[in-house]
View 1 (spheres, rainbow, N blue to C red):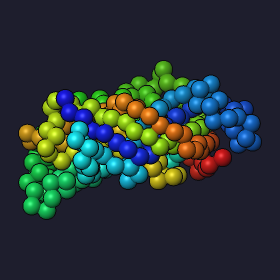
View 2 (view 1 turned 60 degrees about the vertical axis):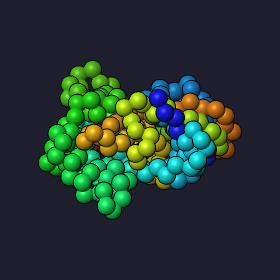
View 3 (view 1 turned 90 degrees about the vertical axis):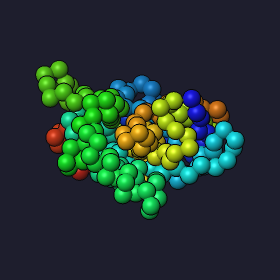
Length: 245
């Protein structure tokens, strides 16, 4: 088991489903961020590194270059309601790019044809699909909506910290080969929050969720966002009414 250490900015994203009355209070500034985070119906949480705002170190404290690729992009940090298809064309390109100009074509062509992706580069590997849906969706990949309570309004609280954490690297990964981090991009502030660690190894895309261990941190700031009158756009939360409080 290897280890990757990180020094820099860290994000804690919490997204809650809120009632109309709670949303009105949030817009009016009646609720503190910890009340939204801890007392309202939390539907999604992510605590991890912010890419480009820190440095990665190996066990010898030597800096390691880590590529990253957006896996999911949201407006204010909201998750998907459900998803049955994930396009990985950009991910495959970034993982291949980590092997440099000389190695790019060989890695890219191998990943395209290794059976983990279809001809449109959508993920068909069941293990990867299960991990993606477990993290990024509220209801998972099921198309049965009978037991689903639709979400009408959401509020997200994003706290930023300066600190140190460590990431365990699974035994299946090779620390001597390039590592790429898959991120959740929050468009309102541009944060690329690390979620999955990926590597091309033995002809396959290795794909594991990052489970960071915090060593120390200091809170630097907290932002609150809202999304109102949510519509279900084929599993994605869609709204024209979202902003920072």
